[in-house]
Image (cartoon, rainbow over all chains, first blue to last red; front, side):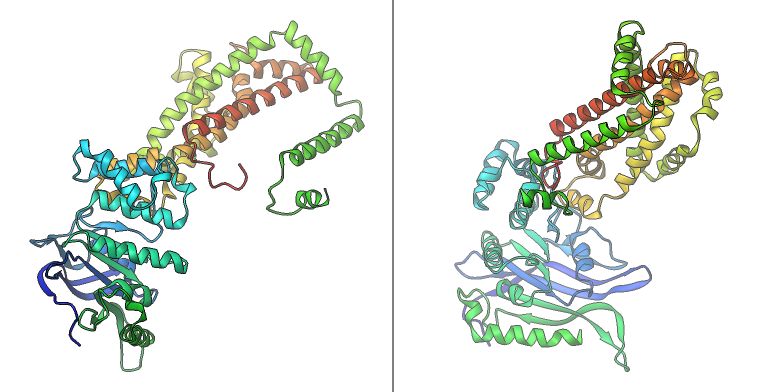
Length: 276
Length: 262
């Protein structure tokens, strides 16, 4: 199905080339190939949200570490930016599953240390931090320590830190994990907002939550492993299925979750999981 | 009232300050009764009180206490400086084996090392200081290295993703990030140092000190004085422990925010 919204894919802004990774003698990733292209919508500021889906234990977190530059693959490479360059730690904003923060610093202190490592001129930092606190509805929590915050608030601080420090890429490991329904909606809205703030903003979500990821993404990659003739799993995950959600008409709609096409897509992906 | 009583004897319950005071009062009364119920060998509180007054007036208790506290703090400061250096350097693989060896030194006895230390230092004071420094360092390094090793990779990765270099990551995650735990380790090691004091002061009695005083009273079987000195040692130890706790809360107010029992 063609999209109801005109768009076109432009330059490649992230490329995963034949990435393989083994750990402890076990193949985790095998020949992972992915290409994220800059989505352009005429008259609209539109970044990208892409999702990597797969059941637990499939190697999503390892792929997350490779994409962020934290782990070097045994084979292949990750290229990022425009023009493409090999990924390095710090080029991609990374929000880990446990939302680690500097517990010895206040919320404002956490943002200050992130801003000091970013490209923000020192004269503008205070202002940017204040704006960031307001934007994430954390203006009353600036002087609190991370231990005094809820899980949702910690997540927002972790995102704010990365937005202050990195450029246009935000990589998130299981951002929907452990959130209640209300918080889940808020996080989805927040991701969509960030994606529309700049044409080059790209959010990469790694998750096992099909419904939430599909509700924000424009492209989905489903990770899985192959099976031998006897049905035994062959180690080494790779991309088994790709879904262009724009063409399927389940992207950029206000009420995407109420559309039949969306439910069909979620069901289709869910049905793939047992065979992965 | 019934609920309070029930909570006092239930696991993982938080109880009010009044209930804590009540528990302490009851337990203190039981201990006092048990004390008076013992035979004539153990001196009674009023005898200990009298011995304490005597030591204070005639025996230079305060001077000896001052000497011992000074010795202990001097050794503690030197030991902390050395231990932190050794421990923090374990972030570099080259320095891990020395830290491993130092931590194994806790299985050695100080008495067996006193001769070696005597040859190395020129004074009785120096001997005591360095014996204590050794005694504290081996335990301090063990705790510090274990603490550094237990820092999850996600904390290091968090700093790295914020474009921090490896040295800045060490500064932010290991040194600043775990300062509260350094205070906690210091607290435990002060107790070890305080316990070693009497033994060290027994090895070299030239300067006196509360340990020497205790050993002298023990030799003459002045049990009331021995108990009085023990109580002084205990009180000062608890006070110093409290003081380190105060410093911890002052410098690391975030440390106790998530604790159930503060």
